[in-house]
Image (cartoon, each protein chain N blue to C red):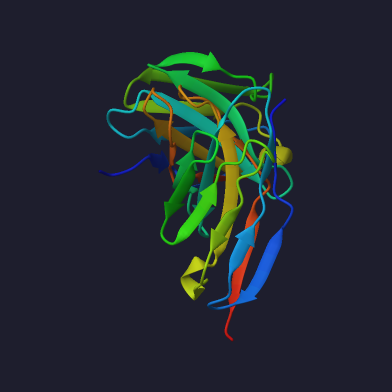
Length: 113
Length: 114
């Protein structure tokens, strides 16, 4: 079991550029979550998919951020016109639908210069 | 909204000391409670969970008991080791369905040589 895979592990963008982050959940897990981690804000929920359908995006900034799950094996988080305050570690997690523990990937560290 | 409070930002203690990390929660419903551990450069790792009042969760020598009366889920370990150096997060989520987790601010454990 490979665990949750996130690519790239590190990404550096210039202010105003676009960043796309990828997540491959654990096979058989139908729930996929995105979180953001910073020193100041800690671990914050962004968005959640169940069976590829968006269920809850209450944590997503309304502008510039979007997430998709085109198939059961991957999800993407896209940030348009990146700003320095978007610098963070973006974490993807997956779980079974019946609740219980979420398994996290190693994260993508995004640095916006 | 729901929230989790961890009062200790950092705990430094000698190896083999008893470890306690306090976790209190506020929730509108009856949540499941979790402990996660995070090592540098990695994502949080699930440690254990509890879903009912008075249920004890445990793993790797760590344990915590769900206390609905005091809305607490304190993490304890009898004898801390150097390998326990990490950040520990308390979290809450739905008991029956996959849902977003609400995390506490985390507690960094720093074991020191005696």
